[in-house]
Amino acid sequence: MRESLKVDLTRDISLPVSKVNVYMLLLLLSCGTVAYIINIYGPAFEPLFLALIFGIIAGNLQNDEVKKRMSEKSLSVLLPLGITLYGLNINIPYLGEFDPKVVLSTLLVASAIFVSIIWLSKIFKLSRQLSLLLACGSTICGVSAIAIVSPLLKPKKEEFSAAIIIITAVGLTGAIIYPSVAHFTGISPEDYAVLTGATLHQTGIVKISSHFFGVENEALAVKGIRIAMIALVALVLSVLYSESRFYVPWYIVSFLAVALFATTYLPSEIVMTLRPVATIVFSTTLAAIGYTVNLRKVQRVGIKPLLVSYGGWVAGVAVFAVLLWSGAI
Image (cartoon, rainbow, N blue to C red; front, side):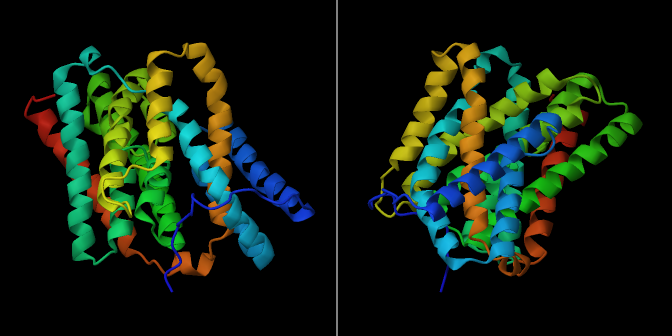
C-alpha cells in the first residue's frame, strides 16, 4: 500500500487533550525550536531539514504506533498553519530593481535545472512525485519548496524525506566547491553572486557560499528571484494535481496572500519579528512528518535520485558558464 504524505484537511481537526497529546506537541515543538536555534548559529543548516531529521530520529527510536498516529493527526492542523505562516519568509522582489540580464540569466539557469531533473528522472525511472519534488527543491528554494508542494503532489513519506536530504547534500556540495572554483577561475564578485544565487538550493547555503566574496546581499537578492517562483509553481501544481480540477487549496491561497501582504504592506520590522515564529511552526510541521517516517524505507529510495539531483545542478552551472563566457551576464 502506498503510504503517501496526504492530509485530510476537511475532517474534524479537534484534538482531544491528553498526556500523549501534550507529550507529542512538546516533543515536536522542541525539534522545531532546536532546529531554528542551530540555524541562527549555523545558517548553512536549514531549520526545516534539521527538524525533519530530528523527527525521524525520535520516531525511529521510540517506535510507538500510538504516538505516530497522534503525530499524523496533528498534521491536519500543523501543515496548513505552517504553510500559511511561512509566507512571511517569502520576499517577492520587484524585478525592475534588477539588471534585466541578471533576471533573464537566473530564470534560464533555473529552467535548465528543472528541465534536466525531469528529463533525468524519466531516464532513471523515478516516480512523478519524487521527480517533481527534486525539481522544485532544486529550482526554487530547497527544503521549503518541497514542503510547500508536497501536500499537492502527495508523495510517499520516504520520497518526501529523501528529497529533502538529497537537496541539502547537493547544495552543501556547491557551497564547498564554489569558493575554490572562483579562486582558480578569477570570476568577479558580481558574477559570483549570480552564480551562488542562481544555482544553490537553500538560502542559508547561498549566504554561506557568497560570504567568500562578501556579496551576501547581492546573492540573496538573486536567490529572491527564484524564491518568488514558488507562487507560480504552487498555483500551477494546485491546478494540475488537485483532486478536483482547477481547485486551489485554501492554504496555498493563504500562503500566497501572506507573502504578498508581508512584502507589500507590512513594515519590515514586524515581518522580521514574526519570521522566527513562522519558521518554528513550519519546522515543527517537518518534525511531525519525520516522526512518522520509517528510516529503512528512506534508505530504499536508493542512489538514483541523488544522481538526478546532481545532474540537474551541473546542468544549471553549465548554462551559467555559457551565459558568462558569451557575455550575456
